[in-house]
Structure formats: C-alpha cells, structure tokens
Length: 100
Image 1: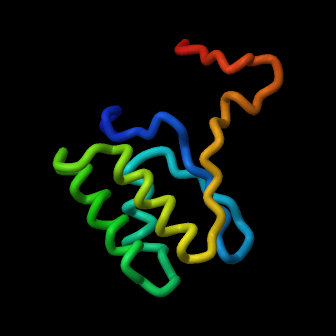
Image 2 (image 1 turned 120 degrees about the horizontal axis):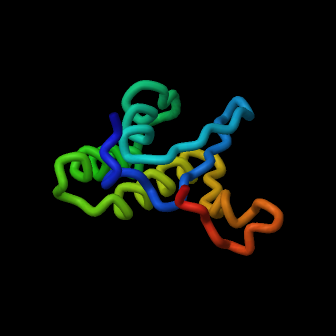
C-alpha cells in the first residue's frame, strides 16, 4: 500500500523513448522506474532524482523536491514530462475536484 503522504498532488505523464506514455503518481512509482526500467545513460540528474526519491521515502526530503528532480531527469534524458493537472483537462470540471 502506498503511503498517501508520498503521492504527488499532480501526476507526471512521461512519454518514453519508445513513444509510450506512462503516468507517475507518487515517489514509489518514480523510484521503481528509475531503479528498474531506466534504460538511458545515468547522469547527474538521474542520480539526483534517485537520491531525492530515496530521501523522500525516508522523510528526509520533501516529496515536491523528489518530483521536480524526477521531471528534470526525464527531460534531461530526452523524454517529455507533462505536469499539467489531469483533472483540469476534463471538460466541465472548472478546475474543481471531487474528493468522493
């Protein structure tokens, strides 16, 4: 079960190098991807993202910092990272969200 404190307020949609799109909603999703499915060279931004996600899981770094580092790593690797709020894109929501 995912700890609700580690869920990002706005998910990140990443278009992978093969053209598929994947949604990352929390620190756990991002770290799993970085440690298991990342097939691109691991540079400075990758290392920062992985470290930030690990630190967020240990409550040593804010979740928002880990999210930003993950976005930076994806973009640095040539993947697009869409951070637009998925709820606001739905017609007729007016930016409001139902908590039900």
